[in-house]
Every structure is written in structure tokens, then in C-alpha cells.
Length: 336
Ligand code: NDP
Image (cartoon, rainbow, N blue to C red; front, top):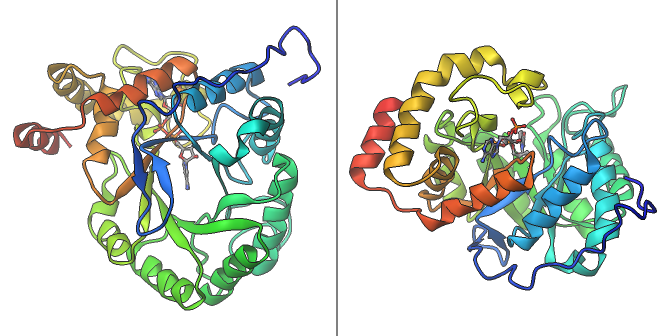
């Protein structure tokens, strides 16, 4: 973004109604309330994307009461560019609102070459967070996650790194992501011993991927830790986007991730059946998919992605109808 580009530099005035309709849920046993819907910057915020669109999405999110924004060192592409773009937009539009935002970043996946740019060593996590803070122009993040478990590094080392990061004031809270229930239990025990505020687990959870229901959600509840559900729309499959084919601008058509045209085609019959249930509830499929996740008390927030302000506006309307009848839940179960 050319911040000094006068044609685009229309001053942002946050909506005065921004806190009127969002629901805020407590994350586990912590003091933190998170919006029922949070926004992730994995896609649509990199140097490959249109930054004015990214800026509109962020302004819309904030105006809708979405105070929690989720980043990671490697979001882009290229790696780091989502944080850099976010930093520019934050400075231009949200500097007066920093204390109204709960900003997350993570490290755990491949980031820079060599043995210290990946996984879970203290060396990697500390250096990565320092880089992230510089890219975003922040003194601290609200939460720093270990992005995935590292089978080779002792869990104690990774958890001590998180503890030191909090002690240094570079993150207020910590979280983990993609850890299975048993690994989560071990991490929670260590973090408790270290007196570290472990408040969130970020896990993939959608109608198409229900692994967390088996024992992760129970483990989180027992430990007083919240769950934030990522890819709740199965990267767009649980919307009406693919009902009549594959739009050329869609994530599946761009093949940027594991979401392929083949995956969409394999699921299309289920998507159509789920869409009928949503229509009978007077909801969009995206709204039903989000409401369905929020039916679980263990879930603090649903972490959506959005390639346009319109998608965000549609998705927050999920909050207008969160109730499911037993019959609807049974129907959904049968389809899945
Ligand atoms: P979603 O399942 O919400 O998919 C978002 C995509 O779905 C959008 O980019 C858009 O795709 C499409 N979409 C959203 N709303 C609508 C709508 N109303 N109508 C039609 N299409 C819609 O989530 P993501 O997979 O993007 O993940 C969300 C966040 O979760 C990420 O940004 C990231 O922060 C986090 N995450 C964390 C991971 C981890 O390992 N911890 C891994 C993955 C994600 P399109 O471009 O086709 O319009």
C-alpha cells in the first residue's frame, strides 16, 4: 500500500456502533473475551493480494466488532508479507485503536532457511517473534502461539520459550495450535508449573473435520483453556460459493492450499444437502456452518477467513440464529 497515496488515503473513522451487535465469549478461565467470530489473515493479505481490499476487509471487521485478528510469521505469500501489510494498515487506520485489538501471531512452520527457521526450538521461536513484531510495528502481541507440535524438540524447551517470551513482555498470553489432546495435556501441565497464561488452543474444526470432538475439547475444558476453530468453512466449501461450479477467483481455483477442485467435487453432494438445511433455517450455508461450531460451549471463537468485506458481513449474521433443533443436528450428522 502506498500510505502516502492521497487518492486512497481516505481517513478511517471507526463505526460508533462497533460493539453493539457482536457477542464476546470468555476464553477458558482467563480474563480475555474474544468475539464469537475472529478474522484470520492467512490468505488475502499477502503481497500477492490487493492491499486496498485487505484494508477494506480489516476496516469492516473492526466496524463489526471483530477485535481479534490472527496472523502467523509465514502468512502471505510471500512469508511475512501478511504481517508487513497488516503493520502498514494498523499504522494508517488503527493506531488509535491498538488497545481495542487482540492480535495473534505464531511460529512453528517453515519460515527461513537452515536449522533455526522451523519447528519448536527456543532459538527459532524467540527470533521469529522478534521478526514478527518488527514487521507489524508492534511492541508486543496479545497472544503468541506455537503453531504445531515438534516431535524432535523436548516439549519443555518449547514451553519454556513461550514462558520467557511472556516474561520479556513480548506476548501477554500464549497458545498452541494443532496439538493433539494428549500433547495439549502435557503442554498445559508444564505451562501451569511455569505460571504462564495459556488461554487458547487453535484447532481445525468444521462440519467436514470433527477431530476435536473426540477428546481435545474435553481436555481444553478440563484445563480451563479456550478453543478457537480455524477453517470453519472448510476454506470456503461450506458456503454457497461452489454450488454451481468453481468460480475462477475462488481459493480452490487458485490452488494455493490443500483445497483443490477435486476436493470440492468430492464434497459437492454433501454441500448441496447441507445447503438445503441452511435454507430451511433461513440461513446461508456459511452462517449455519459457523453457528454449528458455536453450539459447542468449549469454542470461544470461530476463526474465519474472508476475501471481501461482503463475506464478512454475511458471516457475522450467523449470530442471528445460533439454535439448532435435535432434528436439524441429526440431519446434519447423517449427511456428514
Ligand atoms: P475459512 O474456512 O473461513 O475459509 C475462508 C475462505 O472461504 C475465504 O477466504 C473465502 O474464500 C471463503 N468464504 C468465506 N466466507 C464466505 C462467504 N460468505 N461466501 C463465500 N465464500 C466465503 O477459513 P480459512 O481456511 O481462511 O482459515 C481462517 C483462519 O484460520 C486463517 O486466516 C488463519 O488465521 C487460521 N488458520 C490457522 C491454521 C493453523 O494451523 N493454526 C491453519 C489454517 C488457518 P475465497 O477466496 O474463495 O473467496
